[in-house]
View 1 (spheres, rainbow, N blue to C red):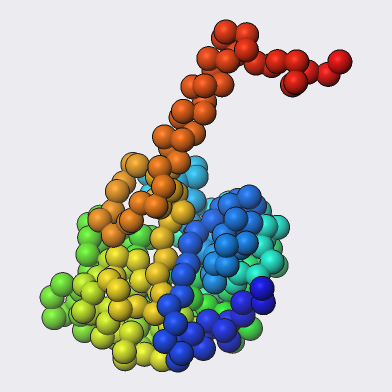
View 2 (cartoon, one colour):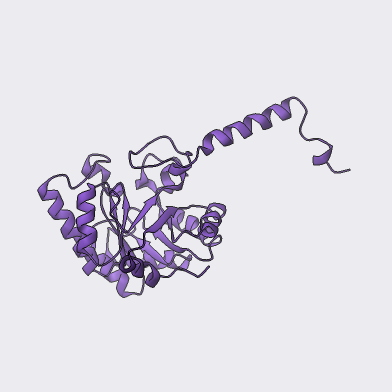
Length: 265
């Protein structure tokens, strides 16, 4: 397999190919995704919820994102690695944003992702100008859930639709190489996808985006605190793991494990 680059990703839109993206937070999972041929692996701040058990993504720190990035990088040879910039790592000042983006690149990320449209354009541009690729993120932005009143679909009225179209254009003009469209009507995501030149990656934004991203724990049935409508389950690993754990406990309690084959003579 050939190493996926930013040029490959941008070219996929022109060729009409769909771009698969999944999150990973550890080396073994990243290795599985990489060997399967995943185009982009996102080291998401969703780790705060599905990995660390936080209520939302707002508690995730730069140190945590650096740790997860290092772990993922060790398992990847071919996929393009994007790391989320956590809350407060880029909102306070552009200098903070540039410094923190650089730290994630030092850990092995090949691009960073940050939330916001028009309001984040100057920050995106500054990070791009220092040589760091940026993936944008508009629509339902989890780091702004308190302002939005929760995890609510965005762009349902004319005013919001115009704002999101303006946001997408601003992110494109700022130099982002792609943009995540989250939690918006499919027809709006389609309009954005057809309006801008950079690839769109949808999550809860319908089928017309250039690619799709989901959280790995969601598709494998490992996280059931929140079950978004847009998630498709591909496996129930929670049941598989639970069954294995119960079998192990029974073997230990009944003296069946360890047997001779598991012991040193």
